[in-house]
Length: 100
Figure 1: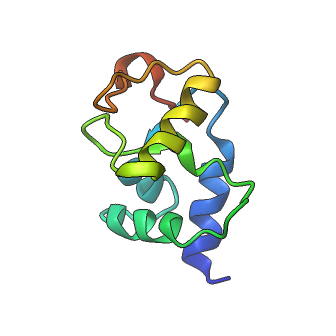
Figure 2 (figure 1 turned 90 degrees about the horizontal axis):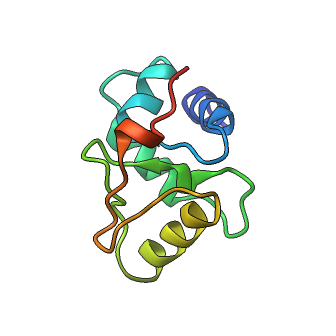
């Protein structure tokens, strides 16, 4: 695993149950400001059954970026943790955003 992946995975593992963070914030906390898209790409390449809580990462607008079945899976995971997600995938960053 390269250094970038290792650092973003360490940060994502720290997001507490019932909280979310954004792709950009994850990149910034891992030491790669401006690499939000790279974080998203890395998460899209995770193997099925990964233990990384990828579903706690959303876009900077406070929405789930995924579509179709992936959208439904992420929404289900978040709701199971008590995160309120509306029908369009919006989550209140004011209420649920994780701060280091």
